[in-house]
Amino acid sequence: MSQVVFLGLGSNQGEKIKNCEQAIGEILRSKENVLISRSSWHYCEPWGKEDQDWFINGVLQIRTTLSPFELLARIKEIEKFLGRSENVRWGPRIIDIDILFYDNLTIKSPEAEIPHPGIAERNFVLIPLAEIAPQFIHPVLKKTIKELLAISPDRKKVIKVRGKICE
Image (cartoon, rainbow, N blue to C red; front, side, top):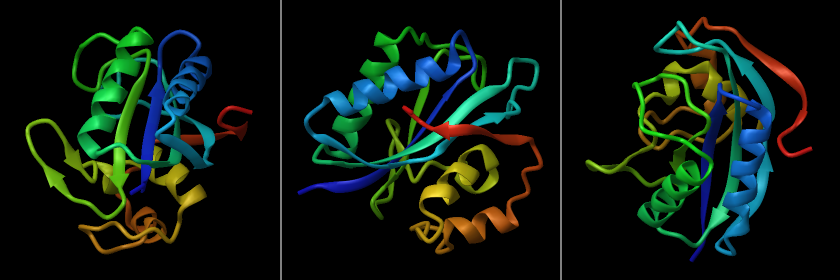
């Protein structure tokens, strides 16, 4: 059975958009994953650790037959393949792929926390999510993405870049 999943993508090293496009290509190379929708790119002020380059961020909506843990393992393989190394928390990275939502499933384990715990406080996630799924209801907070964006405490700059991911 397939599930709808939202993935957050980001990069702030090298050719940022190209890094994210390569990640999307690798995600969709798996026959288990099918594209549903994608957001525009957004140029985003760093969050958490501020003394670094700005990020390019976007959100991908897919349908997958992979379990949450199979998908997480595949994402980690893709990140490693594209050159990501374990580094400073919230620090610079060539690619970052997060499972934001896996349908309405909630998981809290040492390996994964779904929904991603920082969604409601991070406009670099909420803005692209609201672009493609404003009425999606956060399964824990019971608010739509549009509602979460309206009450978000985040005041970091998020600037839409022309075009869609992979265009």
